[in-house]
Image (cartoon, rainbow, N blue to C red; front, side, top):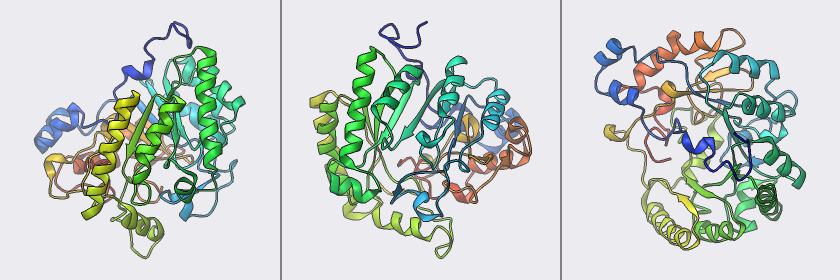
Length: 373
């Protein structure tokens, strides 16, 4: 089957159900009672079909809602995941069907990105990543389309320079929009069905009013989808005066989880949905409302059963929502194999707690866990 071109009517990624889409059957069964965990081996599932790999921890921006802003800068070479570690992980997970090549850093800074994409394509593994698009030149766009990468997400949190550049410090709104349009042009010029182009908008107090304007902007450019999400975490499990003080305070100031912010969000989401319908743009909107610790029927996450996140240094974490390799570690792939970690005591205990009423501390402020992401 051709890797790209008009014959690829149904890209592979459209046939894949994401690990973060909702509780898996294994998770639902485990939630029914701890005895099921013991009797079905639910705490030691098969190796995952999805890995998210932080191929670099370096970034060229200092975004307001990202941990990168609140920690010392990372050199792009020292922050890159080494190819030998990448290839070892791919080899150790034979059922791998999806690779997400991103973490806290900007993937286009990794000198090994083309090699990693090529490895996935050769193995027929669905592959893609998120980018801030500041480095997405016309040449890079053409190369990515030709590479066979399945999907590309571009972060764009405003419809005008002032709102966007306040959030994405170091970026130029006009340059990013031009680069996004250039990617659409490159895809059309190649007659390719891939990459699927999704814009990601993080909804916050300062920018939620920009949403319907962004829908109209994207409709004119011709992207495939706009994905709107809430802030990922409250960081309520961290020390208020510790390392995460800055991002914890920012989240408290900007999250659309309380009072009048919910009403504003509903109005903005409704206007965006109407504009998207008129333009034929696919739009995903998050739930409106605060994380509800008491709403057990709404809580849940299938990540520790279906997928795993590995930092550029090799630390294995339960998911991509954690942000910070000191918050939770389930193992280190420079010291153990991934299967040993996946089946090890730390993972088993994490899964056991996640299925019960005493979830791990790092999950308690997570908007994905509370279904508000």
